[in-house]
Each structure stands twice: as C-alpha cells, then as structure tokens.
Image 1: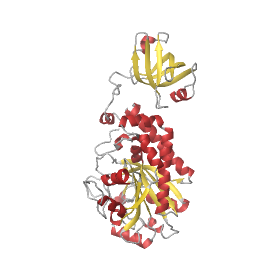
Image 2: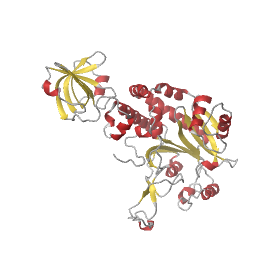
Image 3: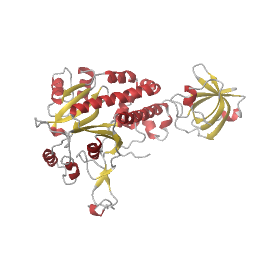
Image 4: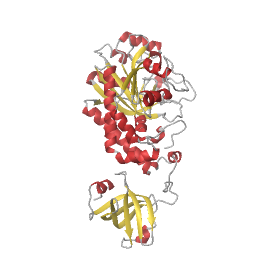
Length: 451
C-alpha cells in the first residue's frame, strides 16, 4: 500500500516501513550517500529521501535525474527538523533527461508560462493551486451551509447578459467570408459562449430563493492587461427577497468565510507566497477578515476623492467610473479597510440593475479591497416590468430574445439581488500574484491558446 508525503509528515512516527510514489525535485549525490528532495503533490512540503551503500543498486540510483518519477520503499527516521525516509529500494518509474526545463533554480514567471504544462511541479505553482483548490472548496462549503442551491447554467447561450458584445460566436456553419444564415445553424439562431450565468440564475432564484453558479465564462475582449483573460471562472449567487443592503451583508460574510478557510488550511502555502511576493499576505487577509467593511455611495466616494490631497492621474468625476488609483486611495488611505461603493450612475451600469428614485443612479454595489481593488460587483435587480423594458430599449438590448427574463417580473416576481466575483481575481488577492495568467491552469489570452 502506498503512503503519501502528507500522511508521513502529519501522522507517521519513526521506524515505520513505507512505500511512496512521486517525483524528484532535487538530487544531491556524494560518494557514499545521496539525498533526494521528493514530492508527490499530497503536501506542500517536500520529503527528504536518504540512500547509501546499503540501498539496493546505489550506483544506479545516483544517476537518476531531477524530474524523474520514482517508487521509494524504506523506513521513516527522525531527521533534524522532520521525518525522513531511509531508502531500501528506489525504483525508476519514468526517467527525465538532462534537458528537463525545471532545473533547481529560480525561473521567471514569463518562462514558466511558456512551459505551463510543467509549472504545476514547481513549489510556486503548487502553492498557488493549493490555495485555488481550498478557496473553491470554501466557496461551495459556504453556500451549502447557508442553504443555497448549486445551479449549472448554460455555457452556450443566445443572449449577452452584459449587453456589451465581445462574445465568442458558436457556429457549425462554414462562414467562408459570407454573411451567415443562422436559421440554418445548429441552434437555428446566433449563439455564443456565455459571459455570465446571472440571467438564467435569476430564474432559479425565483423558485429556490437562494442559488449560486460557479463555472467558466468567456469574453472576447482583446486585452493584454494583467487582470484580463478570455476564459475565466465566475461565482454568481442570486437571492430572492433580498435588497441591496441585504446583499452587502451576504457579500461581507461570504468573503470573510473564504478568507478564514484559506488562512486555516493553507498556512504553509501562504508563508511561501509571502516570501516569494515580498508581501505579508497573512496580515493582509487577517486585516480584511477582521475589518468592518465601510459602505458609501458613489457620490460620497467622488466627494472624498475630489478633496483628497493626492495627485491622481485621472480626475475623479461624478457620473464616471472609478480608476484603480481611486479605489486604492479609498481602501488604503481614507478608510484603511475594504469598502462597498453603492448607488452607481445609471449610465455606466448594466440594464438589469434596479433604478433608484433619483432617476440618476441604480442600486449597484462594488466591493473594493486593499491591495486588489474591485473584487465583487452586484446589484438589486430591476423588478418593474415597464421600467426594465424601457431600459433595455434605451440600451439596445433585444426584448424579444429575453421575453422569458421579462416574464419573471410578471409571474410572481419579487425583490431580488445578486453579485458576481471573478474567481481568478480572488485567487490573485489570496496569493499576492499580480497576473491572472499565473492563477489559472492554462490562460486563454489574445494570441495564446497553446496548451
């Protein structure tokens, strides 16, 4: 029976016979003894394998290359700081030639993106993806414990939920430079990859009260910034009988739950990432987890920024969006805490957001966090049929195609709200990584779909 590194470091005592299977991270050879830095992915920490002249085929083992897969049979012994394995047999399962790209040195992130199929073997990306896995589990755990239904919304859709275009078209037609006749296409209409699961999510919220989606979404935005990718994952809860104030309560509880889970279950990974990124990630997470999140209107935020003694590159203006430097000032300087900014100008927000009585703003809310900026965006949804139709027409959103969405306002509609959070942006916040390409297994960006 095979034992894992996690089991040995966590529970085993010295003097136990064990069998392990994994890979060589590093290999130091001397005349009469050798040391292998061994990992199997079960734990962030490596395990040291010691072999000597008593180990079967000592000379052959000394030739094993870094990156090779091996099976180790031996006994646990107490080392200086942790248990080690005194090997009796080390069998080669898969050799690795000397041109293996991941030799034991610090590689640049740019280089590691070029060998994305190998980078999960590095300590850096093992830390990142351990955190990603833990955060994913925590998200499902939070919603499950709070009575939410998990819904799988369509990946192929006939509507653009954001109304902004930039979608990937899905077709079986041979376009050949001609204007396509979508009536002859697979779905008999124009379809694309989904940019959101929100609209379909609302149909389930008005049946189950509380639901969430968590899956891949797609946007054909030709952007090469550090925070944009063509394929990314979104978490999108929808809650019936909930207004914008209740929504902010849920967002705050949700974020703090996920942070606390990751802090508790990824301590080694966070410590490593803190050193790598020269950032006290644990302190940053602790600060957000313990802060009372401030709440201000967009108008109040602009007022604060306009009198701030800061030389902004972009002038803060009423009716306009916040720049990254504005977000940073609010979280890091003025409030020194996360901030909810709500009641945004109607003209810069989506068609489905509830229009306030001032006729200038909508009940939208963005959550800004220190060191990361915008992390979540949500709103109370427009529930008044006529006002939603008027808004859709003004924004050129086809009402005929979304008749079913409008009918939700006719057939037992109620006050409801929801938010969306880009999962990769959360992982960037949790790990201190600055580029979305380094927190997703295989980044899909302009001119890049190699793996």
